[in-house]
Amino acid sequence: MADKAAADYLKGHHDDFRNRYFEFLRIPSQSALTAHRADMARAAEWVAAALRAAGCPTAEIVPTEGHPVVYGEWLVGKDRPTALVYGHYDVQPADPVDLWETAPFEPTVRNGRIYARGAADDKRLYCTIMALEAVARTAGKPACNLKFMFEGEEEIGSPSLPGFLREHRGRLACDVLLSADGSMFDFERPSLTLAYKGIASCQIDVRGARVDLHSGGHGGGVANPLHALATILASMHDADGRISVAGFYSDVKPITAAEKADIASVPFDEEAYRRDLQVPALFGEVGYTTLERQWARPTLEVNGMWGGFQGDGSKTVLPREAHAKITCRLVADQDPDRILDLIEAHLRSHTPPGVTATLHRFPGKAKPYMMPRDLPEVKIAADVLEDIYGVAPLYTRAGGTLPVTQMVQDTLGVWTVGLAPKGENVHAPNEFMLEKDLERGARVFADFWQAYGAGR
Image (tube, rainbow, N blue to C red; front, side, top):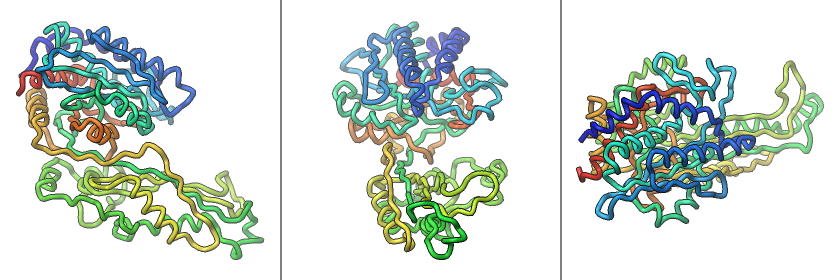
């Protein structure tokens, strides 16, 4: 199964690949920040040029309503299966910059780790380009048809991707999507992620009087929006961590005994996890393990809340408004729009008197995704991972969201197999990947293509 010639090529060109990867990492392609639109365009150009240099016959930049998609293809035969390779060239903002040990957009190697913003999420997509070059230089062409779709908006919810998929459905036709996004369970224990959570996001705005009021002159006579907001948010969970929004769990697919066994087989030490986070206790919905709650049960989390005086010292003010941001991570078969409808209904029935409360829905929603374990592509991926890592992969889920998975399932009708190596400190300061995973990650893709094309 292993493509030894490609592996030898990757090993022999390690330094060159690393240097080119560092060029990519130096581009501050932060999609959330409008000041970096030019950097986003530069990153797209870099990826397209890298695909061409690797040998991809077709590589172009396709405009969208937002940041462009880099598309490439290498079709070797109608009798061969087709894999669509996905990744994203945009990254999270680097803030807070002062918590980075080295500059976030100046890649640095320390203790065998490459530190930089995007090193793990998701400029690792470069591993697929390395794999393509290794295959092109050694075999002349890949063993299966390859298509590449690298977007620039994943970190802002992929708002342009559904339209792109619909518009180019015929061109993107494939048998499987291989994701260079996501992560393995551990650096030396590979995994295959069978499910990602969906997401629904909103903001609650509570308003009272027309202006801020003196708390002495008006306190006790006018409702305080901050108090009202606290009451509303507290009403959304019970004391056992269960979400109290009526109907929230009505579409949740129960965890089967087999799924519970898969989750229980993952080597996870809850006490070590607690100590590492430095919290006095773990908390969540009663009746489930920590991994079951994180991977297979939905959540409703308050991500931020504000209102009134925020400066040093005291200001005796009764604020006119208060706000909170909420995200819900969803599991099969929950629908983001229905969940936001339920939260809005809860808001109407739980807003205290004396204030008004409204719900603002954010774009970037995503449906949850869960694929069968017995797919042929999953078996191929498991064999490839075991061959390269020397140990059989775990079957896991993710508490995070990978919007492309369900979008592709809905639009193209294919499943997504994640093959990205593990990264750490994703979305946080000092993000890194292992330097050896540049080569190892590329080998995974090269070997999968070889096995897939051979019909294994």
